[in-house]
Image (cartoon, rainbow, N blue to C red):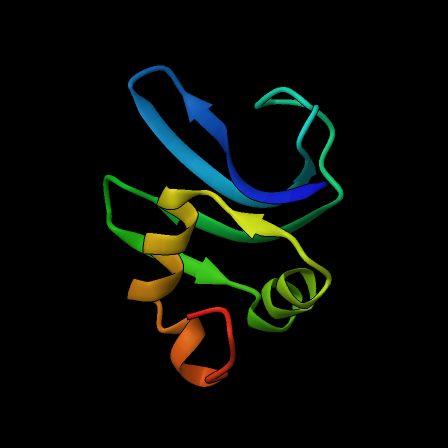
Length: 85
């Protein structure tokens, strides 16, 4: 099963996160299938590759709670009014 999950990057005390599609059995910093976005909680910036996110959701990927909330704020689900909302 595939999940859309945050992967921690950056340096100590300055965490930034990549939104990645990753196998459930992989650890947080494990090998990802594809990078689909970026989130900086300090600057509150988000970049999302919307077609890639929607592709993985259509294939059955489950977003974690945090990734779902970030995607909602970025209005990913508003662009495609489907069963994902």
